Structure formats: C-alpha cells, structure tokens
Length: 380
Ligand SMILES: [Zn+2]
Image (cartoon, rainbow, N blue to C red; front, side, top):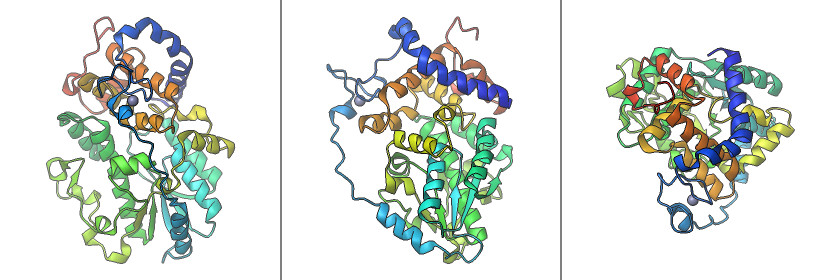
C-alpha cells in the first residue's frame, strides 16, 4: 500500500467509525451481534443476561486500589542512570504509537540522566504512516534511534504458520502476540549485544497482565535468562530451521551481566487510555487523529480482525478493550463503533476487503486458507 493510500484509508476509517457508523448501524443492527451494554463485548464472546450484561460484567468487582508502583519504578530507573558500560543505560522499544511516545517523553523528563537508545523493530508490514511517524517523533523527542528490520521471509513464516494453525484460538492471542514476542526478543538481543542493562517496553497494564501473565512491572530474571523454544504455544522448531531460531532469544547463551532487565513502565503507571492520548496531544507529539487503532501500526491487523470475525464471530482484540471499558479506562462509544464496524465489514467486505485481500497476497495465502468468505453481494 502506498503512503497516500495508507493515510487516506486510516483517515477514512477514523471518520467513518466516528461520524457515519453511529447512523449506519441503525440500518444493519439486526445483522450484528448484540453487545454487552456496559463493556461492548460481543454476545459471541460471552452470553448476555436479561439485563444485557456479559458474564465478565456480572462478575465484575472494581479492582482494589493497587499499590502505587510508580515510586518503585522511578527508583529502579534512577539506579540505572549512568550505569551502562557502553553508551546507553536503557534500550527503549519505540513503535511510534501513543504508549511508546508517552513512555519515552515521561522518562526523558523524570530521568534526564538515563542515557536512552530508542529501538524500532520494523516487521516489514509496518504501515508507511507508522514508519513516517517514528522518524518524525524520534526527531521531535531528540532521541538516539536505530531500526532493526529482519528479512520479510522470516516474519512471513511466523504469520503464515500462525494464521493456518489457529485451532480454537484467536489471531490476537496467537499471531499478533507472537509478533510482539519477536519484537521483545529482538530487543533482548540488541541489549545483550550492546551491553545495555535495562530494556523498556511500552505494553499497557492489560497487555502485561493478560498477555504475559505478569503481576509486576518487571519480567522475572529467570525468565530473561531462559531460552525461547515456543511462542504462543507454537514450537519454533515447527516453523524455523536451527539457524533461523538464532533470531529468537536464547538467554542461556549470554553471561548474566549481558541479560537486560525487562521493565514495563506503563504497568507501574497504570494510566487511563484517554489520559495518555490527551497527554501526548498536549505535548504536541501525536494528535488523536493519528491513533486509528486498527490501521496505523501494522498492515496485517485488519486481516487478523477479519479472520477472527469469520472464525469466532468477534475479534480477539475486543476482550482487552472491553476490560478497559469495564474498568473505566477506555471509551464505550468509541470502541463499540470500531468493533461493530469491523464485524460488519468483515462479513460484507465493505471498506475492508481490498485491504484484506492485499494482506493475504503479501503472505501468499488465499481467503480460503484462513477461513474467510465475504458474504454474497460484496462481489467476492
Ligand atoms: Zn460486559
């Protein structure tokens, strides 16, 4: 997709879900799954009770006020200022999305003595919008920055394998999750090679807790010293040759002092999504328009969403966002529109079909390979 097409598609998606869909949905409402009236979760993900609530909302207890971990984080960061043996104290994963931008700016402000190197992993399916954003933002933030872009054939293997071995799982928790794991593994390697003692990853509270299963802002050291053999329950040996597996992390091959401490600052800060959006806008770094979630970062995200809707009836992304909505950390109206629109366009092909067909072509897959059949009348 050209940069212009990509920008226009993202803008159109943003415009449509915000302004047109709230009207459009009334005409097609009987074709859509019902959604929980509190968190917007699809009835296909959980049955709804007579009050229209999903089982998660029925069982919901507001989380007890967690102990504030931002002071512990701050102490850890302060202890690393000037600590690296080489040029840098911390390697900061930088995708150009709101979370990594917020993390970079806040750490720069609170820990000016921490020598940062920003690292972008370009999975070769990064949208041109995201790529341009990264360069613009590292310039604005005045950060030292490097990009690692592995061969496309390497990542293609991961996506193709994941998409065709989903079993009963969704794309978010398999394919997209393994992409994230590859990004962190690449950063672990860069940190080890460069002797950078701290690795900072901008995963949200929910990604850390639900995705990685951690209950602290730091990954356990024994996990960092271990070798990866699986990703999202898929054996790497089934996907890659022995040589190729060397691009994944093998902690046991590095001396302990070369294994970085992996830290998730946003877990400790635990900010509301809108506060982060507002703050990065106030800093003049990222406007809300540049945050269309399904389109800007990764060109395969719409494909993942559509595959999930066809196989499961809802997209795997929904659960995380619905949890944020339930806990008052994300907007009900905004995300219901996005997920309803995705459901509708996934079935009919409306708006999304060319994007999905293009993504499948890039992966040498057909719609049938991944269980997609756009409904009659959409011209498929
Ligand atoms: Zn609910």
